[in-house]
Length: 177
Image (tube, rainbow, N blue to C red; front, top):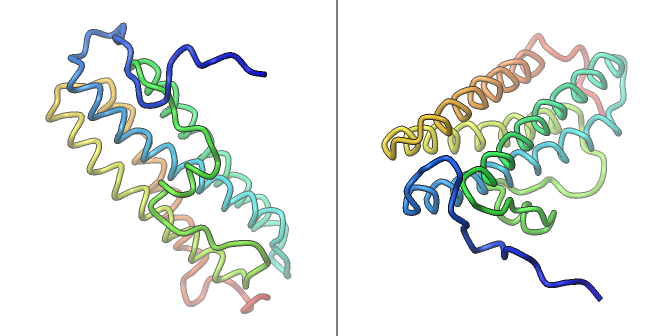
């Protein structure tokens, strides 16, 4: 038997950083969307890292692990900010996938190009969300959240840019399994 939670997911405690409750409510919801997207993206990249094959295996294997680390680091920063705002980070893998904003490609091994395209599409969802939520944080006067999201946005754009390099017509040397 487990003890009842000391704070439920939907509740919001007074935040220690002095933001109005209305602001915190809006931003906790937005950041949980970003957290869900980032964490699901992390799982997508790790899956690709584990199953990638072909003549460019080693480079792609290391690249995808770096992409996963970046998504995971972003997710951690988002979760920490949610708690600073008095909220509870979305932590259930099923709930995260449902709220991610993109469909996880599912089980199985897909062609390398398709996996990279799926990663890029997921990054683009995250980028769109981060842009919207960065602007909302600025409008609401939460410059700490705005600053965090701007850094995460730059990192996501960088990951998308690097994926795009692999996907160029002269990128992958062979259409891989």
